[in-house]
Length: 260
Image (cartoon, rainbow, N blue to C red):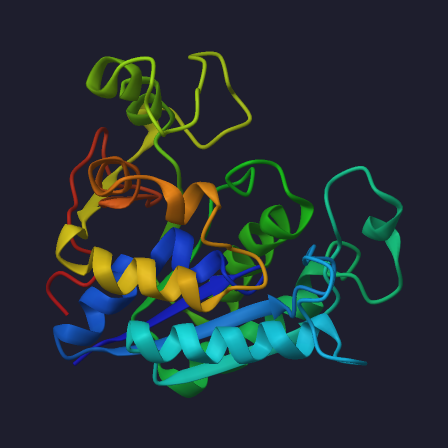
């Protein structure tokens, strides 16, 4: 048995980006640990969704635990930083925001968990955080540094395959339920040539979608994630993409825990 630690910025990011890999690891007998940097305080929620005097963070923490149970997570930890909001907003610089936290300080917190768990594999995000969100970029910086401190050798950077989404138009036509991604969308994910690992998680899509649904404060039934038909959902989320330093060129891995 190996231990997978997967590090994310906000509640719901884990289900969207790594839900399939997490459930796959669990079903193959591995230990899965989820670490979340913030409690998602800056998320938007429909009016009347929360109870009287109920803070959003409390609901999002509960949603994370519900999703984690679906995905086979055995331990959930929050690092306790504040959600920094979208890039360029004044909340980026709020006291206690993850974005303003010194990388080494946060990395030491994560490294202590990696050591406790004797982690074999860590997932973080790519260097642009997938789409430029400050907390996602910080996950990359903190995660990579924590791996150095703890000596976790196998680190995968979760990303989106930009070319895969560009090809969706040829696959599904102009009426596709998938987002329109132009070839020059350099702020979204990475080109396929930069990706070194592609994990087929189609066998776990039911769990992945149920985990997304558990985050009801952020992912409604009318959202892009849940409203798309099954074939489009399979195309969008049936493969999870990663970059591993020193691997490649090209996609050379299909299992993050291979050989462990």
